[in-house]
Image (cartoon, rainbow, N blue to C red; front, top):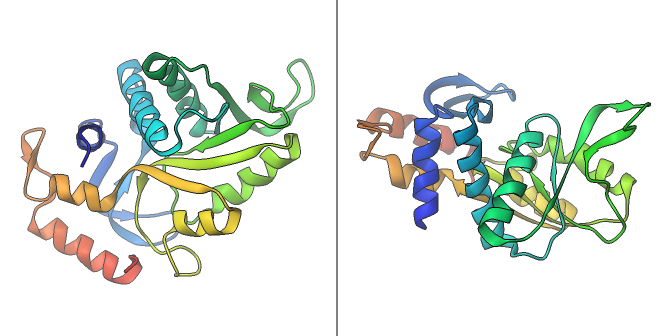
Length: 225
């Protein structure tokens, strides 16, 4: 596992973003783990988060893209922080763009925040986590309605490795198959387990035998073989 991936897993735990216990997801599933990117609240956290995203984007997509699109609302700070980090780490100016939930009809009018989209723009979509792929169903038509853009891919921070709607692959796999672009994550849950199971993080064991058993049982129902 790359060192930045291990650091990111530790960072999620230290920031109280990745938790283990009993959680009810938006889908109604009972999960032994939960990720909440809304817990990144300080300047230093957002700076580090942008750097991890930038490294994962560079590793998976290289430099051949123009715009980072972060769907409202959580995608807005992600796109801004990562665009800044990309400039700092790789010296490339990437424009950020996000959407509004409601179209603005005065001043800086329209549905977009940040950069306008132009025909031929190569776009990477940035999100926190994708469980069902519903957000892409909303984001994809917004992008295509604004300009003739080429969507290079989607990057998320954590791939939960759960079955998508069809059960034939993960949600990220299904998005890639449906829309024809690459999907990637900074880390996936197998890497999280590899780093945290029976190993100290922040002075404690985060995934012990009990949590590991509950994760295994969860994946027996919702995981992808």
